[in-house]
Image (cartoon, rainbow, N blue to C red; front, side):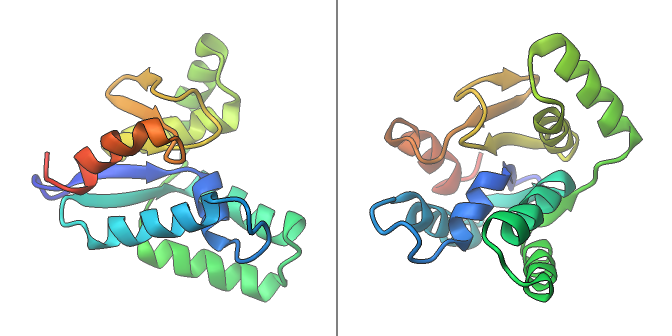
Length: 161
């Protein structure tokens, strides 16, 4: 990682909202997620990370809940993996995630996302599903869809840390 770029991890829900088009016209989150992606891509201060666990969850949501054709799901997984750094889920992630889950109240798959993000050097994990502003080691979890977090996001996306 370049010393002048901060790593921010993306959880499944952020990817799912970005993939939605026209399903819920009154829900601002799909538009917000796409805007967030554009801001991340344009920011020289940020490198985005997607844990492998998130890629799997995202693919399952596309296939099962959104009823997307299998070939399109695979193509979308490949596209997302080409846009962002993918952090692995290996035995060390599984072991630490289990410990985090048993000791700190995380669901085991959420814990895997947290641990993989931390091991990738992320300082921020953007997730709607976990406790907002919770800290796990040097990683902060933040809901990118809350207006109260706009300043936090700007502090990472607008200037280098």
